[in-house]
Length: 283
Image (cartoon, rainbow, N blue to C red; front, top):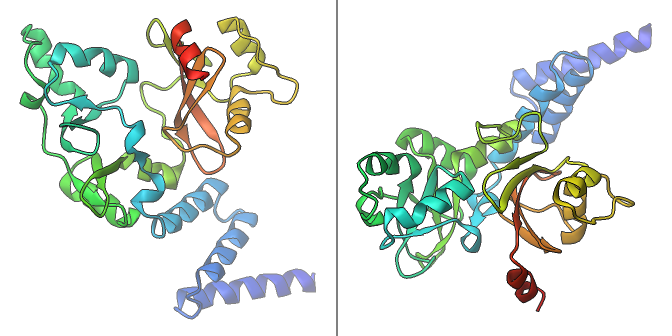
């Protein structure tokens, strides 16, 4: 009884000190918050989000950006008819528009801007006619500052540039928010099903899909002796928890990480490779 009272008193004193501005150390703050969670004053989700907010103030855009090589891009001189397959396959809403190569981003194309041209059957127009101005940010920008800029400018994507002004990658507002609240589901995410077919050769697969179910669906032969899920297989193959945009080839499949955090993979894009593609990828 006395021990309990002593513990309560100690906790109250520390919380009181925090609110009066005494302990300003972040570790002290987290210790108090974890104590609050253990005592059910705040729940686990709230604690996780607070930790995420603190992390966002430390991370920079280079830490979460999609690298240049893994960006889904369109060329400014391509006609709209040519980019529709990419829009359908990736299900992205925004695409960097490039000039001569990926290092030269000249604008952003919004998928929704293609609809009026499709309705008017004007798909021979070049991409540069519909692209919008891009937002460029340095690799060193902190995520909390980036989030504030996204809100002020009412934009959802920024092109990350290196010290020479070349595009190094991209970052979205969703990427930052997921550092705080975890995976954000959208209308393209799966609901009850593990596997969703997007086109003839492209699928979206939950990382928690059991390997035996994956094998049944695709008639593949992946072993489930060491790993239960397809996400576990990917992490083992890469040797680390991959970031969004990382790719790996196994047998006649190309796996691309669509959603992941620091702890686990959530969603994968699976592409069935043509026989010649598979062969060339093995050499």
